[in-house]
Image 1 (cartoon, each protein chain N blue to C red):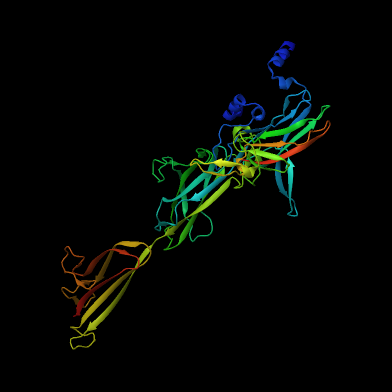
Image 2: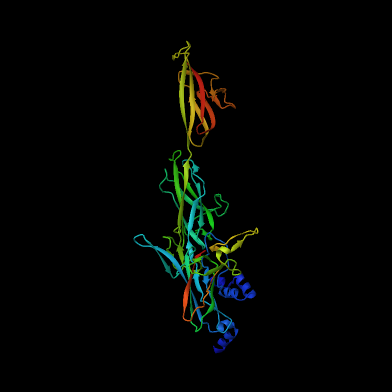
Length: 343
Length: 153
């Protein structure tokens, strides 16, 4: 591999050798330099590249004319630098519900080294800095490359069996799937770290693995230690509803005593707190014993609802009232009233 | 074997056949910074067992006039290897090329043309060749060293 690269001469060196004499010829003779690729790479010169250096000296000969002396060629092989970076791409906490399964965190793993390298992945779900521990159930490689977790299409990661192999500067999206404990409560955060480690080896920067580098040289641990991780967070967006019931009594005499014939107005206030929203919130309340429901007395947000089970949001069921509040966002309230007469 | 040598000699350029009176050798070292137990850092030059992108290299050229007469109009030229970024020389008298050896001069006098017809001042990283030219002839038996630095891309 490297030998082939060596043979490929620099286009410039050839040209100048033909066209000119003197200094340029001298530099052309000395040009044992590699001219294969000169594109700038974040990861640096590819592993296995050979760097050759040689100089020339020129001087006037006593007999006239010029002599050119070419030095020996010193060669260096660029060894494989093992570097990796991991970054969460979620842009913030991922909202989950308590007890939810297969919730997705997304990370990007990038080969920051200069050789093709496989990376072993681990998801750490039992780490500090959070309120609950999610249970990481799977690591999935974005094999479809579309940036979105596709169940059944993207390949589930099996340590040692399909460690993603990344070219220098190459990267891949990794999904971590976790189950959220049912006991997690609103606004609690759960952290999962994704760790990527170079398969060739890792450790203190400068650690060398003889002969294990791409291109036959050594593999050397770079500044990242060839071991990187980043954290992703789940945040429980749990909304909860609370009901407050109050009663106002008006007696037949204009007072507030509870006597037969007194009208009791019950007010039910549903308040949704937390974050997110609640779906299909319902209120049901029984008519207290010893009282009679007053027809046409159900209201929702000050609008009257008919007693019949029809298109509107509430009805009298014969034993109580039922009102469907629909979806209520966190911070919202719904107020329902109805009246009974004391028997 | 003899025949082969004769054939080789026949095809070699005449300059190489002449008895070179000047010897020139090229060496390269890696500059390593180590921190001792007391926390003091020490820079040492080591033979490069391993180089990786970002390593700092020191190239050392040693010349010596082994001949009987002075070597006049003496100059040493070193093209910068492709995977190395030139990082300067401490040896006096250097001139540079940033266009593959076509033109030479002090770095401050060199420019890099841009696609839009303008140009910018050349930097160390643009250097493609470095050359030292000696005003005085090298007397017989004398020599010296030239050094320049580079960083592995």
